[in-house]
Length: 254
Image 1: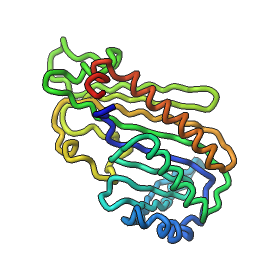
Image 2: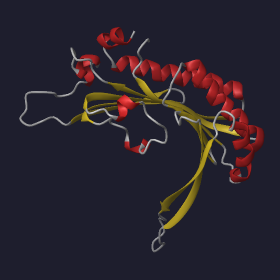
Image 3: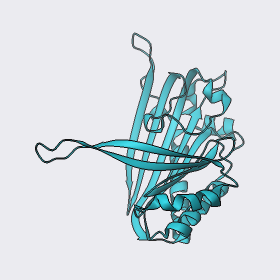
């Protein structure tokens, strides 16, 4: 498409936990530094509740390391069991998938990974209508919701679909119609990358399309097998996107 509405893309690979990942981070950072020089470490506190009666909750600290480019529009986020490549400057699927694989190659070079648990791609699209159209004109009629005929002011419409795709696939597809600022999902807030200025200033009725396609199956670490599964999940996310929008939308974006 000449004018794709995609504004944030995530590729996530989950692998065997590496409890000593911190000791490999300096070498990983040095390998990524030429393209992703912006580095920061993040400590995340989580509350763990024990089922046994009388056991008090405990706090656990997990680490996440961020490697971003100068403009903070693309980068990696590494945890002891996952690597994410994410971008707000999506070019095309070939470039995106290549960056996911490049990151995995760097991590396994130093951490010597053993197996993969899951491969996932999540795409977020902002549907902002042109002046001669309503946001619902861009959506599949099944996703437009109850939009008129009631008293009061409609604030939002949210739909979610969960698909199991044999033998090991899952697709979660969400559509939200919102009036106001960009409807970022809560699990992604605050976004660690920079959005395009027009989206930062957004304050109109728009739709957010959120498609998350995963393949959950353990297999021995192999970059070629990871690539094959990335192609599967990317195709699934793209197909879900096309099912959520109308022909009018595809014509406007082509």
